[in-house]
Length: 422
Image (cartoon, rainbow, N blue to C red):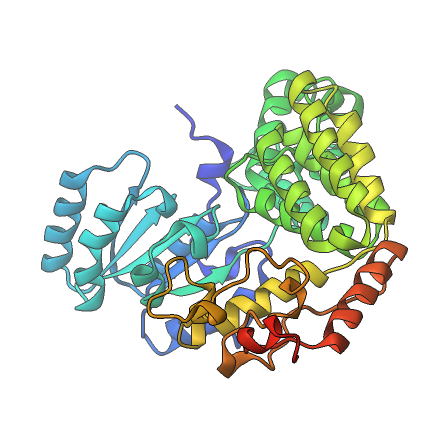
């Protein structure tokens, strides 16, 4: 039985790999590693169908080292133990681990000492961000290389290679150029997806000797752009949504919202919009923050597909509202300061102060004094954490109050305040 095209046409050498010129150029790290016969543990990460596992296999083959290939989805502890035993015989060995992000922490910890002592070099492939999915210990012992989506031209190159290759169609059938271009456009940079369509078109229409655009269009017309919720593109889109709102690019923000809606991840959208509303708009337009909360509640109540309507309103509102990061920057600065300085509370602010004279105690019965009291510890009394902005009428009013209170001054001498001497 014939192997699938995507498997049968896997390149044997790094030079045969399509695309990824940033990783495979003559002066690249991988080529230098091979030339100097010095292997490394590496994690390749990027979208599906871009050649991660293919590069890993070609890397091992060019180093002329024994290799063991496992898939983290299906391998168990016994499989790992057998791989280690094999590596001890053929030391050093390259352990190629597909879907490496699927290894739980226990399995990652099991592999760690063998990576450290050189029993094998771990070469993993993953669609998930390794800075999130892999333990810090594994990351610190591997070189992380990003694999990019293929361009349409590179996908076209791969399709033409499959049509002519002895392990492909051997030139027995031709495809119109616009049919090949159409498949490449649909692929979203995923060569495996494109090869699957090509093979299906060959099976259905190849007997005629030529496959046309119209025939290919009957097989597939939906682009391969939908994101899985745990894939790198998804997290990138979440990040891009907030940055687009922050930059007040309403068209970009609506685009990234749409991408996330296609993925159907309402939870991530809700969380990111709420964080963005408070972080980037905040005191610049508190009403827009409240309207975002209401839009999120409406989206929860109606669900997809109707949820896109209130969410779209919220994104446009946030983009075009006055922006202020005063709240976020103020608390971030205070957090940084608090984490680096000793903790202290003025005695008169403590819940149950000990041995304080009555005149030095907090004046619960004197609201006229509350705005005159110094609340920061004496050693930090000169610190200022609130960073006012002037992005809206509302925030200008807040700043006027802030300046008035600054000018009035504060004191830690409560006895003097009570006597009206401060």
